[in-house]
Length: 152
Image (tube, rainbow, N blue to C red; front, side, top):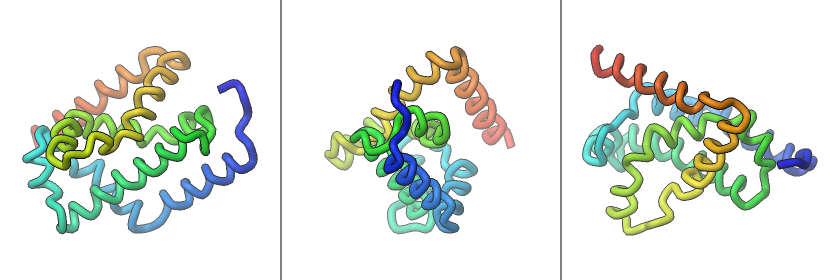
């Protein structure tokens, strides 16, 4: 984007940040990155089955980022500002993108997590223009962390 954020976009951005700081969502985000590393959809259902505490925590993370990315995709948030300050959604996407086709098929809902997917694709291109190699380095780091978790 070549424009500066409007006052309304900046205010909405800060409201989203305030929501991220809410205690239960902080707990969910912390749990997600420590515990949610399924290789398959079946494993995802074992880690966080619907109706369980883990299922609630993962749903909170998915729901928050899907809503935030929907606001971005509809132009209510300033893209550069969002991408400069909100890369966590991309980490969530990287953790689950291999599961989404199966989840979409199981729930017969092609739009499941579609806002995050759309924003993640734009973020990847945006980041490569600004910091070539960052996405590859981040993926490598995430893989190393996953390998360490498996080995432990």
